[in-house]
Image 1 (cartoon, protein in one colour):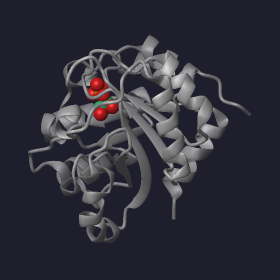
Image 2 (cartoon, rainbow, N blue to C red):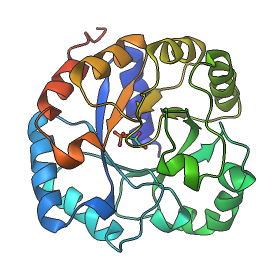
Image 3 (cartoon, rainbow, N blue to C red):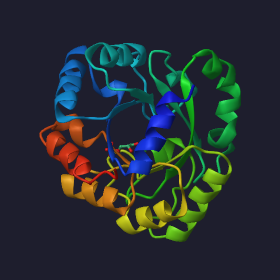
Image 4 (tube, protein in one colour):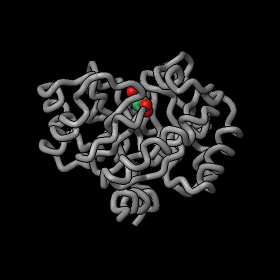
Length: 250
Ligand code: 1GP
């Protein structure tokens, strides 16, 4: 049953903007994770994303279990590789890197991991993943071995997202990469949002409430922030409030 996806699609319909905190299992330990989750719940976070382009620690399963124990916030896996499939999460963003031309990340790794993914029992959400040039090489641009989509080529972004939707993707995730110098422009977000009807997730280099708000006003349905909170979580509340300040349709 596509419970989590149905609720995301419903929220999009109402213009109910969502705030997700991305947790990289390599960057936390049990203690710091507990504190982060507690704070995020206080701030009103809607989702946790867990994963990363490169996860080297063995902390994935425990990380998801701790989040589930400490909160009722849904956990979406955001895996950089098949080894990041974890049955304790609520759903898996089944990413296909549609902005790149690396067959391994378009379909190859999916074929190899299909039995394990099916067996996990997770809700699977097919996601068109688009890496947009964020002004400097990021881990995702290096690891994916695929050129990011140029940040000023809105038409390519629009056509890529449209193709993703027509291929059956249920979400589009546009990502400038973790810690990107230049987040995705509002103009690109607006152009893409106008041309698709599935929820649009935006992430990469967002660090302040103004940017999160403007992204949502331009058409983002969910804002993902990870890097900015690794050193300082003091703006989390304001960012959550900015995202949730956008009026919801009755
Ligand atoms: C990265 O979109 C996410 O894949 C979040 O980016 O870590 O820069 O917030 P940041």
